[in-house]
Image (tube, rainbow, N blue to C red):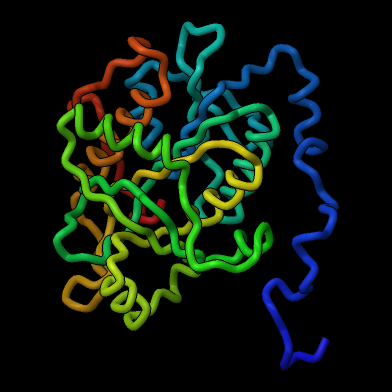
Length: 284
C-alpha cells in the first residue's frame, strides 16, 4: 500500500479478518474447571486504593483470573457471589480490553468500569462523581474492532440504573462525555480546550475501548468516575493533593456500583470512616 494512502487500521479489510488469538483458548483452563467461580457481574477497577475499600466491605482476594498476576475480589461467605471486582491489571485501553474479552468469554454479562478521571470543566472538583454518557474514541483499541467513528457509548439501561442509584442515594454527581486517550503525556492544551468547549467532562484511558468491545461481545457496560486531576486549572495540569478526597470519591462510586449490581438486600454501603486511604499516583 502506498504510504500516502495509509488508513487506520493499516489493513483496510481488518474488520473482516479472523483473529489469531482467541480468548476462549486463553481461558480454556478456567472454562474447564468446575470449581472456578464466575460471577454474573464484574466491576473493573484500576486503583490500589480499592484494596482497603473492598476488604472493609467483606470481599476477599482470589488470584488467577485469568492470568496469574490478576485477581478477582469476591464476597466472603458466598458460595455463588453475583458480583466480583477485578483489578491489578494496570491502566490503559489495551490491558482493560484483554480483561473484558476474557471475562465476557467466561460468562460475565454486566460490567461497571470504575476509576479516576481528569476533569475538563473547572467547576468539577477533586473527588466529585461523574457518570459517563459516551466516549470520544481517541485511543487505538476500538478502531481494531469496528470502523472509525467519533463516539462509543455505554449500555443505556445500565447507565440509567447508576443514575437512579446516585439520585436515590443523594450522591451529588454530574454526567457527560469522556475523552478516551491512551497517550497520557500527549494530552495537549489545544485538544483539551476544544473538547471542553464541546462539553466533554472528563479524560481517561479506557472507556471508549470498553464500550466498543462490550457492544461487539453483546454484554452490558457502564462507566462512572471520580475526579483525580484537572487538565485546565489555570491552563495547566493540576493533580489532587488530598488523597483522602480521592479515596472517599472511589468509595462513593464503588458503593453505588455494588448497589446496582448486587441482588436486593445483599449489599449495604459502608461509611467513609471505613474507606481507608492511600498515597499513590493520581493515575493509578
